[in-house]
Amino acid sequence: MQAKLTEMQVRERLKDIKAFVIDQDGTTYLENQTFPWTTDFLKGLEQRGIRYLFLSNNSSKSRAEHCRKLAESGIHASEEQILSSADATIEYLKTLPGHRDIYLLATPCVENDFREQGFDTDANKPNYVVLAYDLTLTFDKLDKACRLVRKGVPFIATHEDNNWMIGPDEHRPDVGALAAAITASTRVKPKFVGKPNAEMVQAFLKRLQLPKEQIAIIGDRMNTDIRMGQEHGLLSLLVLSGKTKREDIPESPFQPDYVVDKTIDILKLLEE
Ligand SMILES: [Mg+2]
Image (cartoon, rainbow, N blue to C red):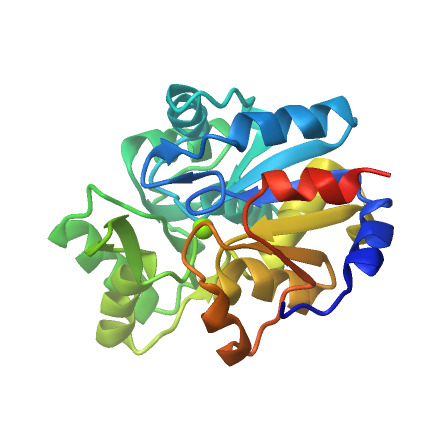
């Protein structure tokens, strides 16, 4: 098994872990179908007093919608237990000067989340152009964003993924692809925020109020979940229930600290 740590070493590291940040698709569920072991895994964490936070690079849904979607799949999480790339972008923007005045490309519900956090999302003189996963994108919005970016307004995008997988061989263009249209027109590349970037890490550190040594990442993708752990010094556990197969592991420049077939196997590692 390819992993940086032996079973004994990972057991030792897990003794310090107070919270897991957990990927959704491929880790918690697959294509809207919750894995049969997911609720037992989460229950097991709760019984051990370990907290968890779901991470998502889907910035088309509001916090309430993310909650509802999980609840429909039998997973009951509060809004505090969900962190999307849109939430991380809100936190990142709050650290920037003049952040309240933005031009936002987003679905109405995500726009509402920004407004509730005090942003003017269609400001007269925006200081930032912010691209979320806008499933209501129109040519006029794209044109307005390009005009602003061309004038020098900084361009921020919630995450870099080019495609959103909606079925085994079915993809929809994601934020990376939409951002590429603006970049092609303006020659300006955006600042990306979501997984695997530092701003996503900052956002969950702030939410959990724990040091990095007490948080572990669980995910199915080498180039986002595992990369985020490796580059930011957090324990990373790869599950093989999603995108990555065992034979893909050696080819990746990003290597997990430990590999398990599925999340429930982590409970065994937490046992004395
Ligand atoms: Mg995933």
